[in-house]
Amino acid sequence: METIRITLGQISNTAMKLNNDSIKVIVDRPISQGGGGNGLMGGQYLLTGIGGCFCSTFFAAAQSRSFEVEGFQVDVIATKSEDLPKRFTDIQLDISYKKCSDPVVFKKLLKIAEMGCLSINTIKEGMGFKVHQK
Image 1 (cartoon, rainbow, N blue to C red):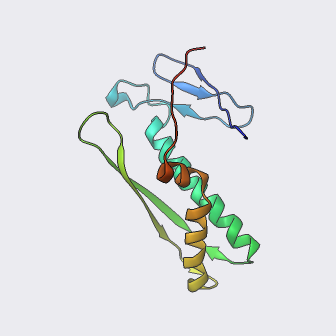
Image 2 (cartoon, rainbow, N blue to C red):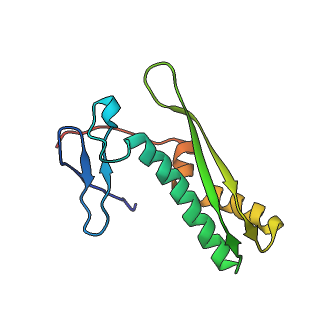
């Protein structure tokens, strides 16, 4: 079974940085919430991952079909729970574009991207989760 690992290292009292040679990703809270304001919050990165995974899957499917799209935009909208534990209770992707080569194929590609996206499949199907101290 293939595994994916990322490593985050502390860079301040409130922020973590992805340990990666080529990409700078910082996870922090806004100043208004006691953070340093140096990056997105973890939940925002979760939503970014879902939207980004969907888009890269969409683009791969589009390219394999010589499908063209311009002005592609994905708004990831999440509803937060009011009760504890805090979590997202609903996530929706609102998709738009300015121009595409075939609107019927576009709709098919949306379904292909949804079904092929690792992040979306994980959210929909659930997974095991544990915190382990090394």
